[in-house]
Image 1 (tube, one colour):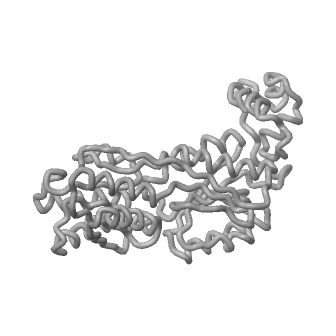
Image 2 (cartoon, helix red, strand yellow; image 1 turned 90 degrees about the vertical axis):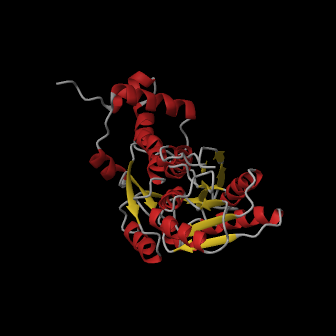
Image 3 (cartoon, one colour; image 1 turned 30 degrees about the vertical axis):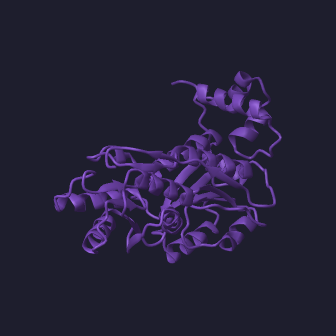
Length: 334
């Protein structure tokens, strides 16, 4: 049986002290380890196949060595790539990630807060629909850092709550302007209740106001394929006569496309369809879906890096804000 690699082995290969290896591989650093040294240690650990003893680490550091990834709907295919990005960072620091679904409702999100205060995780990355910044104060006071993933601009605050965001207003406005430039005179928007729809609706409305065209919005109770199907039917039956439908996420767009096909409406010849999120299915449906990518993997990487900074002992008093890019993905549905 092959000898299991130890921290001493990692230190020898990286050319550093065993104390430095311990700081890096337990995630208990204080920011005193230079980035180049940190990278040498993690590279050496990976090369040797070093596997930490999580139970021993937990006893030594009084940490669970676990990060919570909180989402409103674990079945939404937007989130797996985001989680994968988080894991690429956390695993380098010997942290595991657990996913928790709250249904995007106040009861579920507050239940998560209560659960977290029991010390089951060391940090939180999440998408929250109902909690305010102040609701996280008990976690922050207990030394549990929180990074929120947001759908609109943030400016930071006087508590150490960090935010990663993509400007959904700007992205939705850009996509609506693209549809208008394609000659569409009546662009309907469909969305679900809760979540990021408000910023996206504002961007859509701003683009139409700019050219003096009338908006038409249908809000369904849910933010998924069935909601998109129902909302598209309502838009078709309204008398608005849309030449394009912009859905607030890709799942709703795919539901809308199903509804159009059932009515024998050609996409995009009769009605164009666009979505938001660029989930994997967006390029697989027929016709392939025009949408907005938020580079979910990169967003997850950034969120995890910010969280790890806090867990390593970097503790700015104020919350930090990081804007991430978006890009329009033009495909066959428009």
